[in-house]
Image 1 (tube, rainbow, N blue to C red):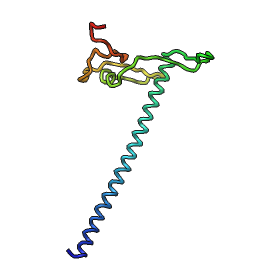
Image 2 (image 1 turned 90 degrees about the vertical axis):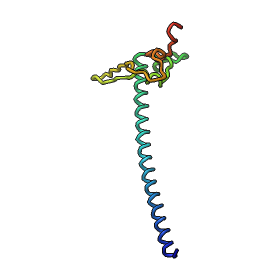
Image 3 (image 1 turned 135 degrees about the vertical axis):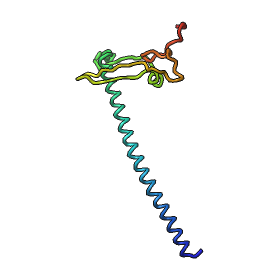
Image 4 (image 1 turned 60 degrees about the vertical axis):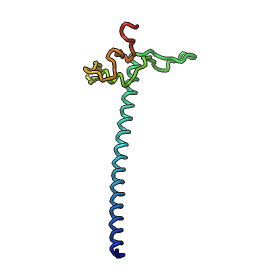
Length: 134
């Protein structure tokens, strides 16, 4: 192979590699933008859940105070522990806004996914004993 041909071949290889690097840089930039969008969405969901918990605790909870001073410091509400996957598999939430209020409904899904026993979880998310073994 002549040197001129070898140089041309190497220049083409450099060109292919430079294109590949540019394509990867574009992909990385797109992935970074997508990650930022997902992060922003995650923070939005976190803020929504925090706001919902605040409203529920204030509406359905008890006022909490400092045990030493008796000073009111906020609200407290105790709920039973639950399994997120089981609750989401068994129930679905319907919500809408009516004026200044949100109306939230919970219904049992028509089909419970495989692996989730229909009677193993109560609406509050508590695990129930099998029937007849309470």
